[in-house]
Image (cartoon, helix red, strand yellow):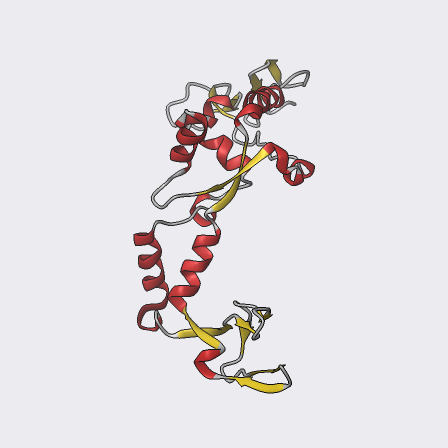
Length: 219
């Protein structure tokens, strides 16, 4: 993941067993240096493209397809506002089944709740939208051409199983917004500027800072 190469370094007091003295430091990546997309930019849809994540695709696959560089997977994640790939990235079809089976066991196909089916009147107007959660005994009554109509049972509602529920949640994760390619270089430039330490008490240079050594006691 190219993201870690973009992070500045940090000299941190050594806790290694083979350190030579309490003054020893180790150089590590500063994982606390993190950025997120500005909240006001998330509503500027002109700089993003909507993208549907194909089955089996990982962030690096999206970056390769979209930017021509799989090491820009971190750009995909940041601009899609994904902070936890394990919970926010869609599972493939095989894994979502296995996940659901482990979660529900023998109740995998049990009905979790009911949703409405789409109902239209004789003129083709939608008078009941699909997907509204309803009770198991829900009925829909309406008047069409002065005739009272009652729709009930499987004609007005459908049961949603635990497995269907989990797959629907998973499918919703496939739709993300990615920064358009023409704004990529500006994003990278801004990101690198933010990573620079600049003027600070612990800064050695733009990409290296030194932390306080708590092993040293000042009398």
